[in-house]
Length: 568
Image (cartoon, rainbow, N blue to C red; front, side, top):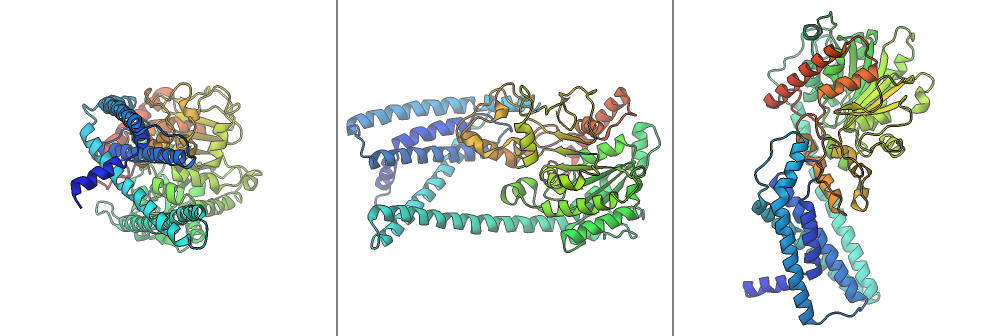
């Protein structure tokens, strides 16, 4: 067959309506969402959106033929297609030309340096490759469905056979994608993350202090802590570090961590964590924080260093690892990861805590970032704690799948934005962002304090499948301080944009996206743990110190620092 003739035939077989909708979807994909994009991610997104628009146009054309509606003449159709193609080309060129401006609107909101170009040619090339691959898969699907339909026409009517062929082909493709491709990729990633977690850092030796987790006297083996556990234990501030900043006497913070290698079951790891916490006299501290880590087992130093400074080291914290995968992967493919472990740990800690005299036990708090926040919410049951409630919780970057977060946000006070809600009188739940809370600081608290720390630019918090067909609430009214004013809602496209944002939202500068900054944790922990002994000027100095320290560590990190896996 003549290759040129074959290519020409393939081009003529393309749908005019599909090309029009594809071009509009392509153009919409170039508009900004929450996170800046590289030309590679932008091209892949635009190509996928073009393919979806093209598919919608083909479905429309098929439906028109199926209903036997009148069609324009070939000459009129050719003229109309030419005009549509020219108009779509103009729209695409304009949007490619404006792409850099749109990306800079996001970068400006995140205080990032602007880019000079969005690389329109590279974006177009990647989009074209993506579209061709998806088009080939779609045509393969049609071939398979037609073969299946032809096999079944011997037994059932032709139109029923066509439906059966499409359904069986859909199930076949879904089974291959879900049970083979996704599962294989998931297992491969899990295995690679497991091997990474087992690596030893030469610059991080085993603690010699018998009072620390992983030491020779510890119930938890240093080798079985895992990479993330060793980072958490070794990276926290010592008493001397805290005193140097506060100018006051400080205690050595107690940090307990049990890795996946510590025991065979979640219950056994939770009991081991409790025994180690008791060995280190963690229940003698003023504050006890039960942490649910992110998917990888990482614990954000921005959060824990902050609370240890605020309470002069008089803090104990305990965590148990439940996974090796990072939070976005775990959230998308196995959101149930960690619920069992978080529940087991809380039950062990809370069960022992309730046996202690109320006037001599620490104030008990929950904390989690990202997937850790989601599982931390699930760890405590209302009817279990209502008779003896904990002191509160600080959850940051709570994922969109959280039922409690979603319910509170949906029932927020009228007039408060979805990206920073106010809930009733603020006695139980408050939301905070880079600028603190909207509730006046002198507003009285109830017996338990819950704070959600979230950024308006965090797609892991604000993604929703309903974004495909309706404008999300956080896009109506005034935007968050770190969201581009150029952001607009487009059917289907916006959901895909936000899904992509979730994959790269941990690559933003600290204080934006899904990377929570220590200076913002300061205000959150002050509210949650009822800090009163820090004057305003001292808090300002602490914010500056922690912010500079965190950004310096994150910038200099070569994979060994506690900030290397920032964001979860």
